[in-house]
Length: 77
Image (cartoon, rainbow, N blue to C red; front, top):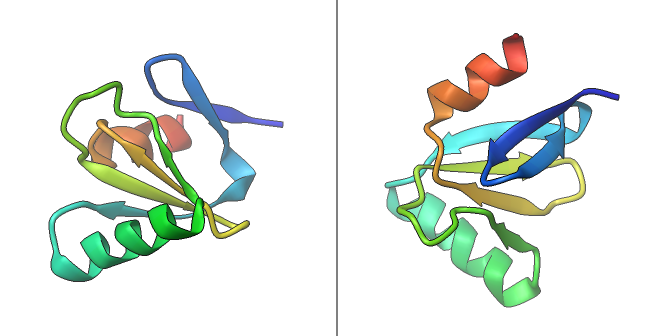
């Protein structure tokens, strides 16, 4: 079981990650809004600006203040 840090003492199981998406486009914002409505959004930004969204295999999304490149590096190390 490998876990990666997604910021502020929060961790995600590496095997559960489906996608890492950069925040900014309108379709991504709509995905986030829908997840919030359904109770499937986990915000781990610690009050900072969201830079990436991690999609899990359960359909939950994790909003992180880390960049997509930083998360990718943590997964590959």
